[in-house]
Image (cartoon, rainbow, N blue to C red; front, side):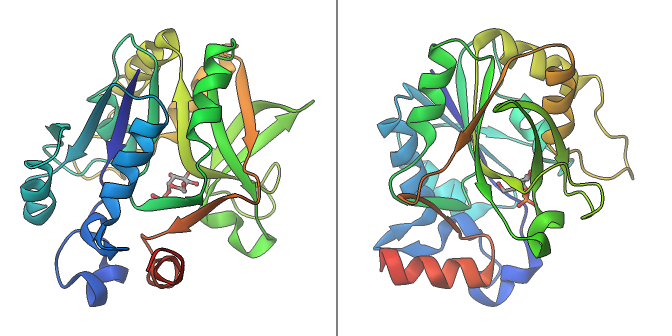
Length: 238
Ligand code: G1P
């Protein structure tokens, strides 16, 4: 199984903390944030860890040179979907968004297990309050399974309060289908970035079986991609 870690763009909300550097390189408990996510991927059974980076992320790239990971470069910032598609092959995979960490446990192992046991894809979710709905991918749940996914809906359009929590797993066939679905809808220059969610929604609409994995209290996500989240993570990791 491969793990894909798509590094984020250089978020302007984080510039006071990163000083122009990559948010994945912010220090957390004596190592960069991304080191925790690489560790999480390996602990969850990944034999190969692939980080999608970009030329502008010099600090991250220098660090990755010292790590046992494969690095792929996204040439232009056209979104999370196209970044992930670079590393999708006909092989089971996990996707771990590397600007967030989990403690004390990660749901990634449970996602991989769900795929091994027969779902086509599995995603980790957490219940969120109404005020946060427009910041997340939101699940459409039917009889306990994942029937659909909407990216950052308005409160009126949100099918539930279950929010995507930055960790995904796909079977080999689903990985291959995801790549095709993303490549079929790559944004043209000037068009908005393409998230990962539309391809997942399209996959579910073809009849793929979706596992809705609810994070336990132990599986707490720390959003190190926001100043508040990073500062809160530092309270936990040091
Ligand atoms: C991304 C995804 C979104 C997900 C979120 C947290 O959004 O597009 O569906 O809920 O990560 O995992 P971003 O935070 O990059 O805007």
